[in-house]
Image (cartoon, rainbow, N blue to C red; front, side):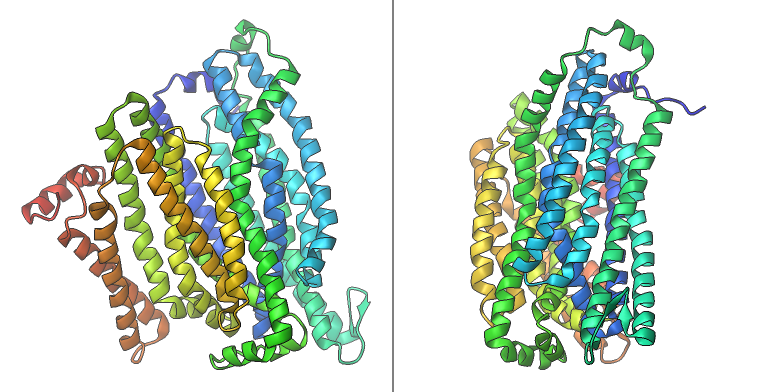
Length: 600
């Protein structure tokens, strides 16, 4: 019989050790999930190129469209509530109100069932209107297929919040991996089968899943097959969510609810269901609104970019086609079929996962930063607070600067390696050049906002992101409508809006914490090293790619960039002794570097 988890005993463990263990578990799962997601998008894009080069971008655009309406609705349905449940359960255990833990679980089930059903119906019905708004009728099937995952995700959120409140991060981490793995395996398999069966049907009967097409309807048939294939890929998300939910239910039943019977018997009576319900809602609303403000930007991107591109194609279609034809990409067929806006949006979506690899890592820095900053702020220890803030900024910059500059310097070969489709590789590379700079700014925003929350300014990030959305909408509209910029304007909009958030957040952090970080050591020195490494990578690739294949040339350029970067970080004496001591065998590293005067 499996050993049941004891939340009471775990709550008595050292808080720091428990936090570090939980953070490590979630970090590992996050890396695995991001890798799965990245591989999934690449393989799907390459699969969609089955019909031809431009169809890869078209299919990716349909896939992204389903996500853009899903994210804000899913955020409303779930964001904030798992955290609220987690906090209430943690508080109840601390106050020895063990019957409340059971009550919270009982209250959350009908609440999430109603919320999930309501949001599922909103997405299902709203999809018909949304596809007309973005001028992309082929996106409908994927949107309808994705809508049930909102309901499933609500139930998943109950269990994740419940376990996290008991400081047990393993169920959340494992369920996320199951979800991402199911999405990858089931999605790819169903998308492939739909694509193959649909194509075989059309070639033998002239119809696709009972739908007939007249003479000259080959392009429409292929677009329809692609739409069904994308919906098949989306079905993998629903199935992955179901696998995740089944695992969590089994874990709850087998591993127990975390509250041993003897503690329940001694506990005072639980609070009323109405009181707990009101507390959950009051706790969740501000958290959910902040999450919505952070995520709704992609929804506006989809809405504005595609509508502006669609209008631009009507008035300046030939100019756009000629622009990309000079780069070796033919979009004339997409223009003829009135799908060029979806194709370009797909190229934008092809570059996004590479940017997200940078921003995902710095989210962990923000999560880890909050307890340290909060502790120093609460104690009134200004020296410790300054050290904590500088360490977070330095670590964020040390990672984000070279990664972002590297995407800019090697955008073309990276996209060529990752994507089979020439359309996505070429146009996506142009997007990635601007997106690389945006990745740097976005990667810095999360840790800075986390530190603001750590010093008690929890509403400031919500206000900043709300203003940022307005800036993003205006700047995206202004830049995308310029024919020579078109789809790249989306990245410019993200860069401008997040730059405002970053600069304002840093100013407010300094103002309210009354701590002035040393920006020379935390920002300028890593920036110099990163810039030199990016220049080295660019010229190295330009030279050796004339003599060897693209993949080894790119890998050698990245290796050289890494050597240049680390060398200049040491020459500029960026690191401190205390920071290096936390590395594996840090004492030995410190001894060696001190010998050559390479650390402060």
